[in-house]
Length: 421
Ligand SMILES: [Fe+2]
Ligand SMILES: [Fe+2]
Ligand SMILES: [Fe+2]
Image: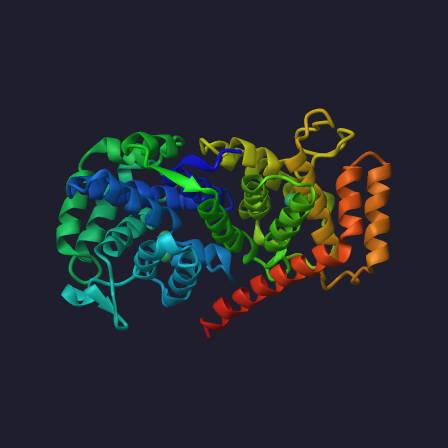
């Protein structure tokens, strides 16, 4: 793998938010819509491409706190009581990735009322102007009824926004919005199935040279968003990333490849964002219907990462983790010839971490039990024997490293939860 990857950071963020939007079809691609409205307003304000990219990233992630932890869909009603919960969770999650500290501030303020000018600060922190743009865009999005023809709704949406000028929204932004809202194309775009492509054409690619370390850090942020949806999974991806990195080390992969493997471990269950939480949180065995839905997660990991140029190899390592060497895995039924080493490592790590994890409905397995089960899978032609023997002969070390990573993830999960009470 190359030392640096050229990646459009907006693409990378949108691959996360569009996966989140899949979980709630009734919410009309909420993140994507809010991103689009914000961009239209930003363009009218004459922002340059860098500023638009920042606005796009913040808008695409704005409700991530609601979807990640104890999600409450309350925020998707026009008038709701307590927005502090999901804005704080979102802020605390996003700021985990240091280069996104400004984005975190924007997200924290995205429900602040303008309150006739008082809304530039909230509880002692300065509310960025972008927060107010996203607030307006967000409220427009929640007012759209997806079951009705769109142009017939424009007058009532505009009048509700206008009525709240000054109190909820910055007056100048309301005027810009009214101007945009007078053009039919805006509404047609907003309810288009291709809204992500429309956004893509709207702004120039904002390509960053990602050092492998940056990519690992950003993937780690994604993994927190993915894992924190359920206390059962709160440490899973952190464990898989750590285990996979250690196996890669024993396999003498070079440093950049090891970082790539680690990122793949963090991202492997990205598609779980598209799985309803009742299924993720289910205390017990899944029915066959639920299992069918669960199986889609790895397909969505693939689809999401596939939209990001530069991530092709990491995508293969991530989203082939339920493939098996004998072709019996899913969803592509690839075989030994088609499965690269990275994918095999992530697959073994995923199984290992799942076996050592505690769940309310299953007993903790001993080292012997874990090895027996996994060696059975090697014998049946499912997983790679060489990787398995590395895991077996270095069991204690890999186990400890993995457990430490999971403990750290658990502490973070608890800390963010606590900050809410
Ligand atoms: Fe929100
Ligand atoms: Fe929202
Ligand atoms: Fe998985």
